[in-house]
Image (cartoon, rainbow, N blue to C red; front, side, top):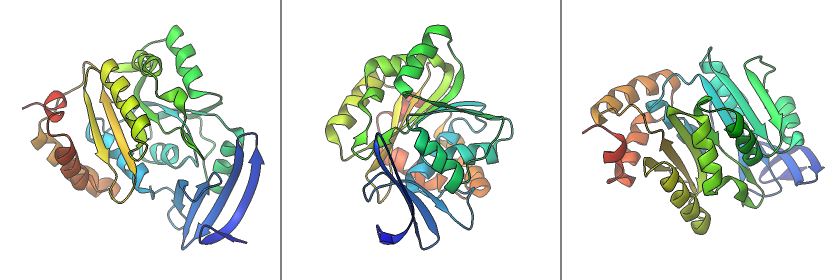
Length: 267
């Protein structure tokens, strides 16, 4: 059976709706009942990041090139978690995924490994950071938020309270990365406002070329401030190491954040 211009290789349902996996032209994609891809993977190179938004989320390596303890809100096909585990031997990842059915297909169809450095919790991401922030602080040097269903971004992960809790769990020099839909203007403005309040405007936004995604980056109060020249040198090294478009990321950071750059970079 063909769907979304590709071969439908899996279809299942849970309480939240449909889960579909489609293969097309050497790419496997996860869908939640709509044409939008939730995750994608190259069948010939499954550890390499394929989707443009996931690649853009890795622009965070410009600011922290050795992530050690990552909290992920939203797992999807697990491609980002798999990349982190593959590339960083000392990195630990905790992922909170709302749907156990999504975890099952991440394991069965996207090669998410059984790795002692990967802990997965089934539940609400917002509830997790609420509870964890009541018991701990500064647990993670990176928090990554990619919480979507067929209808869009989960509203529970857009409030000021949510970002307050994330800040508690984030190291003082840590980095929060969030995948946003730029086309959802109301949600984008709400998230930008709440993140700006919590992180005192220490933020950058990176629109994903040829896509509707915008990746937001928020920085802890004791963040290391590199110069733009430092970032150019690091971008060249990272691009060679991971085959991701870091020099383009830098161009787009500069183009879309002319005023904000002064808050996160050293002059």
